[in-house]
Amino acid sequence: MKNISIDRTRAKDFYTNEEFADMLAKAEDARVELLGRMGEGSDFLGWLDLPTDYDRKEFEAIKEAAAKIRRDSDILLVIGIGGSYLGARAAIEYLRHSFYNCGSIARDKHDAPQIYFVGNQISGTYLAELMEVIEGKDWSINVISKSGTTTECSIAFRIFREALENKYGKDGAARRIYATTDRKKGALKTLADAQGYRTFVVPDDVGGRFSVFTAVGLLPIAASGADIDKLMEGAEQAYEVAFNNEGEECTPLVYAALRNLFMEKGKSVEILANYEPSMHYISEWWKQLFGESEGKDGKGIYPASVDLTTDLHSMGQFIQDGTRLMFETILCVDEPREQVVIPEDADDPDGLNYIAGKTMDFVNKNAMEGTMMAHNEGGVPNILIHIPDTTEQSLGELFFFFEFACGVSGYMLGVNPFDQPGVESYKKNMFKLLGKPGY
Ligand code: PA5
Image (tube, rainbow, N blue to C red; front, side, top):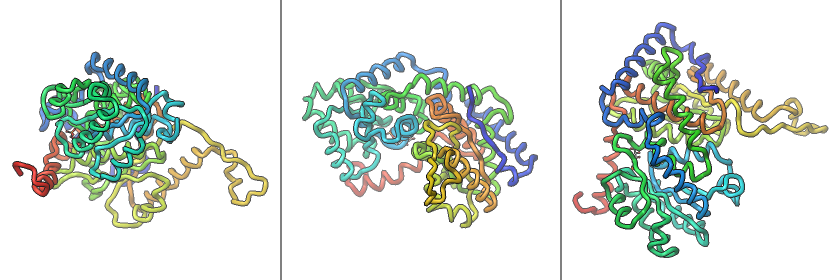
C-alpha cells in the first residue's frame, strides 16, 4: 500500500542542506515533546491515540446509527461549526460524488441521504432556504457541539428541532436526533438526556479541530456511505509513520520542518493548493487546524488556500508577482477517481488536437508542473504532497499526517497548539451587544 509522500524538489533552492538538517532536528525535538506529553496543552492529546485506541463499542454504535439514518432519511442535517463540522464536510466532499446532493445521486450511487451543513454561520436566508429543501422529505439531524453552547449551532438546532417535532411529533423527532457532545456536561447533553436523543461523545481530551476521528466526523461520514473502517486504517498507517519513522522518512516531521524553515526566512503565509475541486473543504479543515493551533502570542504562519487551476485566473497574478511573503504546499492526487480522454476533432476548430487522446488528468498534472515551475521562478518555495488516491485510507492518512505535523509545528513555534483563547473575544462583544445576561 502506498503512503503519502513529500517531494522537496521545488523547495530545495530556498535553503541549504545544513539549514534543513538543523530544522529537522528541531522537529524531532518537538516530536519528543509531543509524544512525551510534556508540552503545553498536553491534557488535549487524546487525538494522538485515536488511530489505534478508540472506543470500539461507540464505533459500532456510530455505524448502526448511520445505517438507520441511511434507511429512514432522504436528508441529514449536520449542525455544527469549526471543528464540529469541517472534517466531516471535507471527507464527504472528497470521498463522494462531486454532485452528491444533486437529484438522486446520493441515494443511487451511495445508498445514502443528501447531507446539508447548517449552524456554521448565522444567516437567516441560508436557514430559511434550507427549510424549503427539506420540505416534504424524511430527514434527521446530527447536532454536534463539544461545549453544547455554541450560538450558531444552538440557534440552528432550536429552529430545526422545532420543525422536526412539528413533522414527526416529540417522540418521533427524538428518534431522528443524534447529538454528539460532551460525555457529561453542557446544555446539549442536558437537553439530549431529557429528550432521549441518541448521544455520541466528544472525548474531554480531544479539541474540536482534532476530532475528525471521533463521532464528530465519523457519524456524518458513515451516513454518507463512506467506509469509516478504511478511514481509520489510513489514520493508523499515518500513525505508524509519525510515531516510528526517523528523519526524512517521517513525513509529518519533514513538513513541519519545511514550514518553520520558510517562516524563519520571512515567508509568513502558507498557501495550500489543490487541483481537485473535491479538496476545497480539505483546505478549509486544514486552515482551521493550523490557524487556530498556531496563530497566537503574535506568532504563526497565516494559512491560506487556493483551488487550482481555477484560482490561477484570480490569485495567480499575486502568487507569481505580488508581495513576496508566501510559500506553497501543493496537494497532488496521484490517481483521481475518474479519467476523461480529450476527443479528436477532425476540423480542430479550437486547436486542441495536440492533446487529443490525452486524459484531463494528464493536462491537469502538466498544469500543476508548469505552475510550480512558474511560482518557483517567482520566488515561491513549493512543497509537493503526493496523495495516492481518493480512497478512505488515503484521506485518513492525510488527516492524521496534518494533525501530527500541526502538533509538532506548533511546539517548534513555541505556542500551545491545543488551545484557542482568541476565539472568545468576538463572542464576548457579540453577547454584550445582544444583551445576554451576565455580559
Ligand atoms: O476547534 C475548536 O475547538 C473549535 O473550532 C470548535 O470546534 C468550534 O468553536 C465549535 O465548538 P463546539 O463544538 O463547542 O460547538
